[in-house]
Image (cartoon, rainbow, N blue to C red):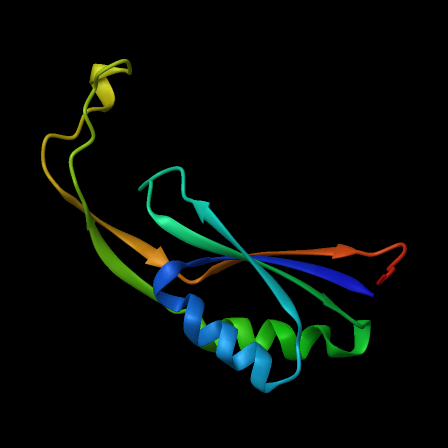
Length: 109
């Protein structure tokens, strides 16, 4: 058994949730916030049998796409002024960051 933790952008959250349900995967959704853009994310926690792991990863990959977004300038207040960028910067966002962990035991009460 495996535990999948997938951090996805909020824009992809509903689409991924519906796809997981359609393919009979149970998932728990947690609201989370990214560190760089301070933007909303959703973290999905999914438990699955080893033989369905690749199917779950494929569903995540198909429903979470990268896109470019303009990041506002970051103030140097309290930080290093050398790293200050005074103009908006286009950065890639989206996709999914996925962790797959082995599960030693699983109980459902």
